[in-house]
Image 1 (tube, rainbow, N blue to C red):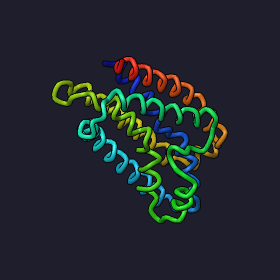
Image 2: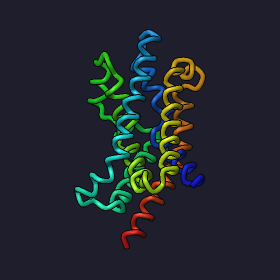
Image 3: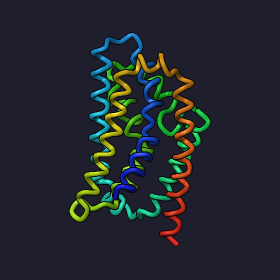
Image 4: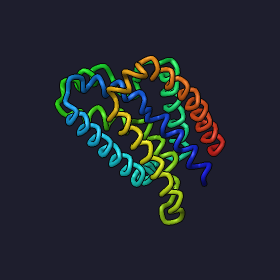
Length: 207
């Protein structure tokens, strides 16, 4: 179980990409007061946690109602995570998370906590897929400790994301955009390998 939790933590951390959220958060809150930044960061992480919790509890029944197997979702999830990994490795703007029009809209918003921070930056498609792939097959009644451990790992990643957003200003002065991109590229390589493994596992289970 410990191995599962460690692997889930790594995958979820890489998919959420807390380091890539820092420069976006910094640019969206340029010139804002410290109180506003803190309020937006806390609210965004809280909303993202609620979205992820609802998806972890209701995602599998929804797929069953739609007639979609976990194996099919695992293959699609692996492909989606692979696209995210490619964007990370090549340091491209993430088309899997926000479009150009959505970014322009976010700059005009007074409250950026729900959009674009909570969704799609923190609880984006990649994070939702990861939650469903790992938490979906786990029954709370049969394996409560594993479910609690996965929830704790997800909460830890969200806590790290919140902490990085709260120190976004000083962190960007130290690390810079280039430093954040280098770290994301290294993590992208790991995510790419794990996404391929998801596809292989899905194909193996199907055939």
